[in-house]
Image 1 (cartoon, rainbow, N blue to C red):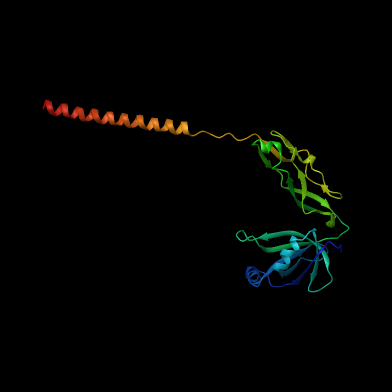
Image 2: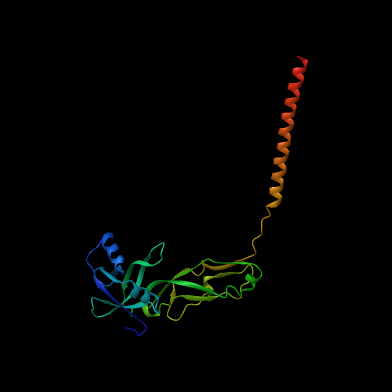
Length: 228
């Protein structure tokens, strides 16, 4: 295993179902499933704090030990999080070989967004692509891919072809079609006051017309009674 791999100790579990999962979470542990390789999927649970530290550590590869057995390389396949509290409630891991490339999804991070001349002039910078699909050896998968946009002017568009991949990382997305970011002109402020004034005038005219009609009716009634 590479020195950059983070050690993670888990214990196998046989109890399945939502009730068993809730008991684990109440005791401070997170249920998970290990996939991949020639072996069948294996259920496990892990200390919530140790899992949080391992996932936050640098490097995509985890050095996984099940029930104290010899560690084996794995990568994160998917993590489910509580929609309210944000902590991990279930995790899927994938067995890997360090000498075989795998597919992974990596965040795309834009730097220099506040320094771009177009932004300083009031333009709106929008990031269109936020994740990239890549292929690389497990040990070569980066935590994120960074691209600088500090030179963008109003009206500029950056395509995926402008983003450089780290050594050993192959981009799988369509570089000809994907857009990374755009910098649009300042959004115009819609003046609502004239419309409000116009509506007020219309309401006032309608009220005057209504008062005039009521006055005419009252006048007509008085004439009729005087003729009687």
